[in-house]
Image (cartoon, rainbow over all chains, first blue to last red; front, side, top):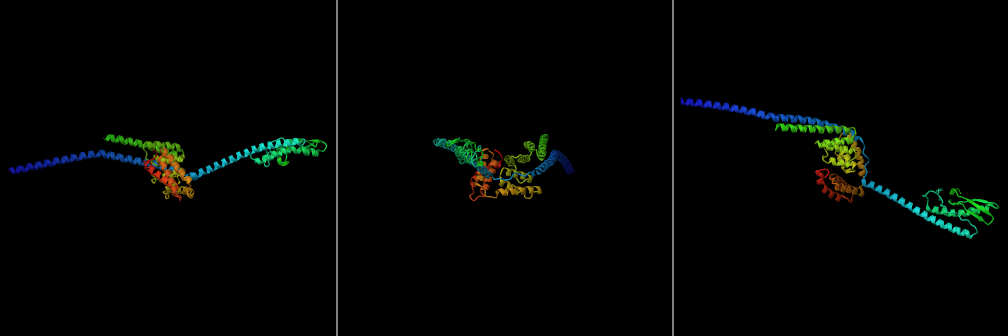
Amino acid sequence: MKAKMLHAGAAAALLWASAAGGDEAQRTQVQTQDQMQAPDRTQMHDRAHRQTQDQQHDAVHAAMHDAMRKQMGNPPASAQMPGMVDREVAGATAAHERASQMQQARDAARQRAMTHGAQDAAMARRHGAASAGMPSGAMQPGGGMMGGDGNTTQQGAGMMRAGDMHGGSGGMMPGGSGGMMGGSGTGTGTGGGMMGGSTTGTGTTTGTTAGTGTPGGSPMAK
Amino acid sequence: MIAATYSLLALAISAGTAADEHLLAGAGAFRDGRFDAALVEFRVAEKLGAPDAGAYAAAALVKLGRPEEAIEAFASSPPGDDDLLDWYRALACYDARLYNCAGRLLTGLDHSGPKVAAEVAGLRGEIARVLAPEPAKASIDWYLARCDERRAEGRTALAAAYCREAADLGARRKDRHGGARAKAELMRLEPAAARGGRQ
């Protein structure tokens, strides 16, 4: 009887224990479900957000690609090696400097020619005084052989000097020839000389007539 | 804890949306040829954390004729991810007269779409023409001088690009003019350049 009672007690205890364990397990399961629900919701949100972001990003990316493709058509400037360009520029600068130096040399030569011309004129004046009224031409810069224009500075200085020299002799010639050709009256001769630039020369020839030279015009026309 | 996560998420969403709005506005301006406006939008998006904004800003800089700044802006993202961006990256190099750099980038665009391929072919022809003769010493010296100048300004990525070009050009000469100096400079610059952009 006692043994029967013990068995019954043990069975009841087991039953209770299993029931209690099941309840606890159930409770734990519910608790776990509760715990799981919050992160799931976060993950779902996160996933949805990521999807939205990806879609937005794709839209932005597509828009930018479309824009970049549309704007890629403009041709770039032609390629040029940097050092080479600089060398060309340096070459051009050197050429400019050379041209400038040549211009200065020409100007200096022109000045020298003017001085020499004045000396020639002075010498001519002295000779003129010595040879009975030989006139001297006033010294004026001539236009030179190539130009015919007294203002140009581009002509050779040597030519200028020749012009000056002939200008001096031009002063001498008109009077002489005018006097010779005129015969008994007043003779008029055109002055200027071959190289142009000379001006009025007035002189008396052999004591009979006065010759008047008119200013020289275009150098080559004479 | 959960509330904090949500607020962080909301903040990220709003920042991301704002950045995307600026990127979209920039893309529209770029498309219309208003590159200065596009640049401003991309710069704002970059500050808001948009990952591609730096490269887009670089593309706008290329169109604005500021290739050196573009090279620096592109330095933050490696090439090879996007053909179109690589095309603009190549243009930046080309406009900065970094022809070897441009040529290398164009090599990777061989299998692009027909429009890109046609543009690539044109630019490659131009690069081949300018690189055909043996590089002059004066050209290499120019790149080395640029490298020095940019390094002195603290623009290491750009300085490295110029020195790399000098090294590439020097290697194409029999006397290897400037090659050793360019490589020595690169050794000094590359680690800093790898860290990125201006310093």
